[in-house]
Picture 1 (cartoon, rainbow, N blue to C red):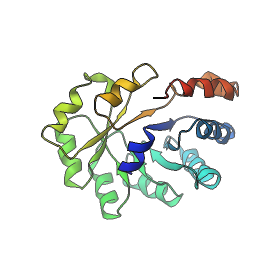
Picture 2 (cartoon, rainbow, N blue to C red):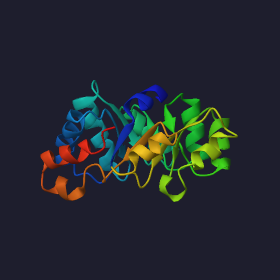
Picture 3 (cartoon, rainbow, N blue to C red):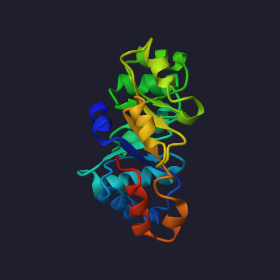
Length: 202
């Protein structure tokens, strides 16, 4: 997973996307060169969406489940074919479940204590969330005592600052509505979404 993120740089975060539009949206994302995405687990519909996207794009994209908050959700997400799990927190129950089942998991961290906990379970690719609440050099402070860790920035990432996150040491960024604004999805304006995604090229 580390190499995938390092190569692709952007994880598209799909949250509250209507099921009747999600395939068209992901096709648009894929055509713009983004090959890693996560569907946030906000309802039972999210599991259906992951299963649907795996059938349509599984051979072309890396598709994960996000906002994984407990072991039950982690298991259900893996049962529908998720390639990886993404979380906003470092919950012990989820860490334990994923470690015991050798699941590709990117836990969320904010503090040194969070980082230390994740490392104790064998996870060193971490999601700094929310990434926009600290100065960009905060990642260097974390990597000082934890040199084996790598980070994905999530929270407040947009076309204007994504290059700054990457140049400061993050190996990737997670982007949601700033990548594909909700009003463009509502209007089926896939061409405008393509143009917006192109602003994130680096």
